[in-house]
Length: 307
Image 1 (cartoon, rainbow, N blue to C red):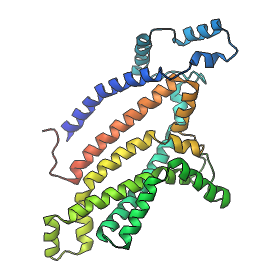
Image 2: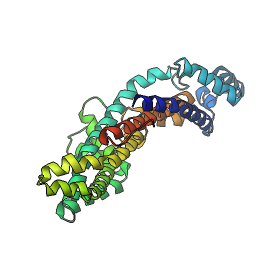
Image 3: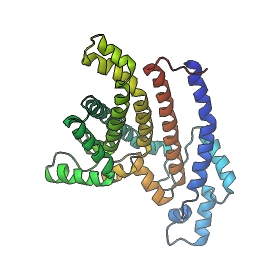
């Protein structure tokens, strides 16, 4: 296992290097001149060129990339063109709210998705199955921004139970987490049902039942555990997407997280912030996939790594 983890970590280095190149060059393809935005619309050409020189934007693109990577290796994420603050300090207040929102969304989506998928498989073609799959299809079909607006209208405006935005209290996380996790819950429910139905047809399940094992033992201990590998795969991938995919939800709820910061940075052509955020999302996604691979061996001892 340790050999496998070390190998995967070593594989991350060239991947992150390639990702950093793509992020840096695609960021500079965003239309607009950040120097002009910094200088203001009434600034002269000389003033804009002076700011470009100060920011290093007048250098060839490869020189800018080398400078960027040199600072990155020393732990310097750069300085925001908009605020003049270090990018790392801007992340301090934004990172943890986004992490809390993502974790909360993933936890409830995973629990409810597993419950719905399991009940749908156990009671196949009965009312719990129909109800569960209608719920799953609805969760996948509803656009996130539309669901968020409906939740705000009902639970914030009409009932006044939850705030419409911010992150000052735990109530602020409820509606965004429901919106963010709805699609994930639905997908996990469908994959759990499909995987569990296949497992229930296996010979070892029939053997267990023939030996007189109760369904309360067969389903959770034998069938569900052996059905979780594809579910864990989907859960890990979706969690990685959630980390960087909360942009729409954070915008709808005016949530002060990393997604909202990314939108504001793109609007201002704030290259250092955009590059740092996208690189951070990439690292998180790669780490999540590493954790998913490790979980495989815990769920199925037959799987061997590093051979």
